[in-house]
Length: 155
Image (cartoon, rainbow, N blue to C red; front, side):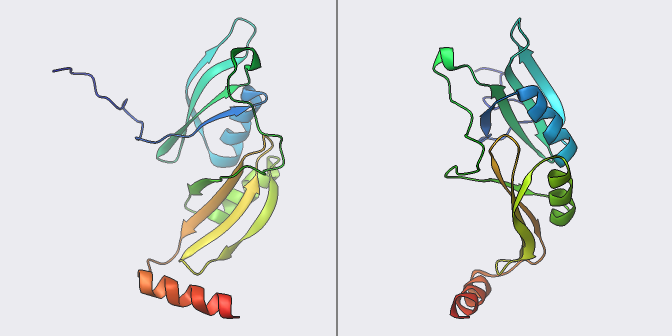
């Protein structure tokens, strides 16, 4: 029996791993906007980031520069038109969105109180990723969420 944990310490079973143009600048942005702490970084001899790990709140995200010569994933075009968002629960969604936009993110949905109990808004970071920034304000039953959703859609 191995003494090595199948999930490394500090990691969760699922971890976003994103490709960006200029990973060093992305790390600076995530540090300024979201309070990220750099855990690890591996670079090529010319300084491109092959792999980095950041801690944001209680979760980690991995990122790297593009390496098209290795048939690796490409960075998004920058418009936030990806088929997903990275959901970020934080103590203060409004303050986090304000820091992110001050650091260069584009506000796409101002924070507002939502029917499911979150204060919620969205930004697109300078690297093309859409972030849904939320703070839980109320713990609601599924019946209450459904009732509020029906009332909102009826209006």
